[in-house]
Amino acid sequence: MKISPAKENILKRVRNALSQPVQLPFPNSEGNSAVFKTDSEGLELRFAEEFTRLQGKFVFCTSKAELIENLRLLSDNKEWRNVYCQTPSLQKLIGKNDLPTLNQGNIHEADAAITDCEYLIARTGTVVLSAAQPSGRVVPVYAPVHIMVAYTHQLVYDLKDAFSRLKDKYGNDLPSAISFATGPSRTADIEKTLVVGIHGPKEVYVFLVDE
Picture (cartoon, one colour):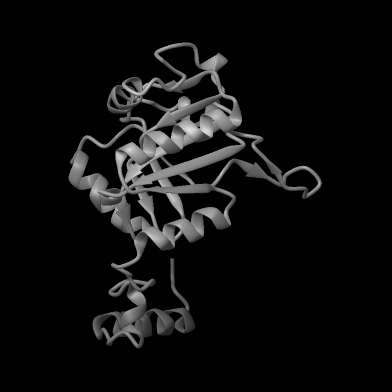
């Protein structure tokens, strides 16, 4: 097939251009620097602001004893009788303090569920969860109220920081599912009216324990 002179001229110019690479006019736009400025201080406050802005409920605890007391007050206030928990460390902590917990009971009867989490992302108020946690995939989305207990060492600034820590923690054996919860479940699919709790819990709490 014969190439027309005009097309051959265009291809020649393209070949010449490729053989003489030029410096990028905007090198910083190629991912060499972070889009968002990392704030290494005040992660607790930043997370709390973003999380509550998205209708999440944040409780800061100065110790495990204060965590238990706050959980007890919340349970009494809401008149919960069945609080579901599959996380061994939390079962041990809660079980010693007589909170109304099902532990390994029936999640279908639970008023609320308590789980741990992987990390908290301060910039967006997001909680990172994974299938590798004892609570698995079902508990965080099934119960009408989801309570997550986290510690200050689990705070990171941005999404890339969370992924970096997950890779350090699990290596090549990453969990089969990693999810990101940013406030309670909500949708506006029906007549553009915002409905909370349509695909998951109506209320989401984060209890952050200072270490």
